[in-house]
Length: 199
Image 1 (cartoon, one colour):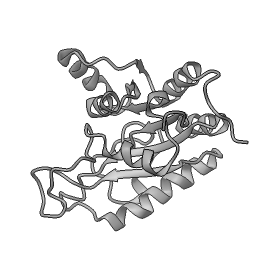
Image 2 (tube, rainbow, N blue to C red):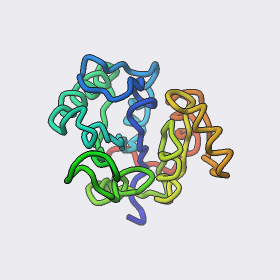
Image 3 (tube, rainbow, N blue to C red):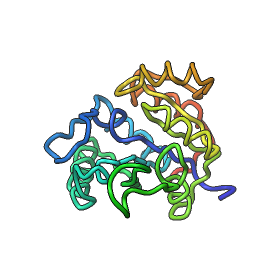
């Protein structure tokens, strides 16, 4: 939408929660310090918040799509402790070369493709040009750039090696921040005066 709202698209593992490899159970979920308060700050500003997560563990047979439901419920419960919420959680269960159909597939949702962002635009009044993608991998940065959003690379999770990869490939995130908390501070500064508060 031309005059839609600003949104922040967070990667999940290594950005909002600690990356434990292929998370299979809610018990493994650990929030990254400051993540809940950061999401709440965006909620209070009226900025939409989403998770966009590649979950090829489904294609690899490590867990099912049904197994993701309690994991994401736990994530929402943890955010709720900080009076924060997500407007949507999107994930890609596919992998282009591993697993069996329908999960072994070349799709348009696996980052760095933009399918998950496009789905949010279809379902919410999102203006991608006013939005940000925050993540710890080069795929997050590439997806954000391809969608026309601004990008923040965080140095949690795979962030340090991703920063080196970005430099090698000449890919420039709009900002590099230590954690999601600093990423959101940067976003709030960039978004001064251009966001809609809830009526």
